[in-house]
Amino acid sequence: MQTIRLTMAQAVVRYLMAQRIIIDAEELPLFPGVFAIFGHGNVTCLGDALEAAGDQLPTWRGQNEQSMA
Image 1 (cartoon, helix red, strand yellow):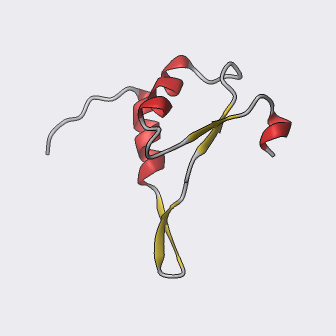
Image 2: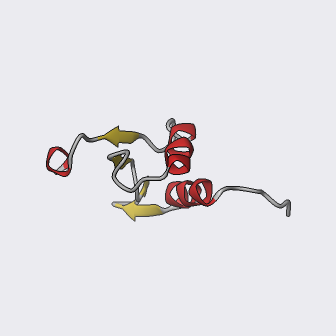
C-alpha cells in the first residue's frame, strides 16, 4: 500500500465521495453534492479541495441559507 499525502480538506472531500448507499438494489452516492456559502466559516483549502473534485462532487454555491433550503 502506498502512502497518499493529503490536506485535511482533501481527505474530507475524498471521504464524502467514497460514501455509498444502496437503494432499490442500485448503489448511489450518499452525498451527490455539497452546498457552500464561501466566507461563512469555510476555509480556503476546503474550497480548493471541492473545486478539484468538482466532476465527482459538485458544489452548489448559495448566497444565503434561505436560498439553499
